[in-house]
Length: 96
Image 1 (cartoon, rainbow, N blue to C red):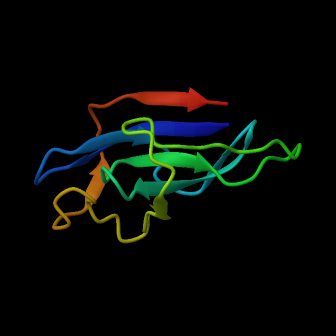
Image 2 (cartoon, helix red, strand yellow):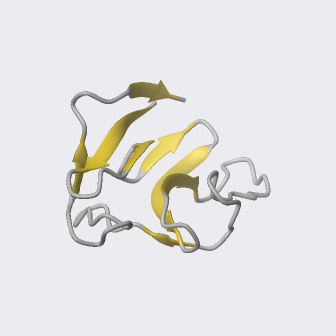
């Protein structure tokens, strides 16, 4: 079971809800990625354990082009200046 939390940039106030690191759902393992069109971070399933075709796309703009987000440096994809941290006042969701 994955834990999705709100992550927020203190500089530009960009935020996203996700695991913020490699994780797993019942549908398969996930990694955080950045959409190359709109710079949104989202969790992407990287392969299906049952061989199902994956058609993941950005929920914000629909683009299928992405790059893996460097979850260790946690740089904000919007302002590219600050680090994104877990927001203590944000959502916590147990995802499956």
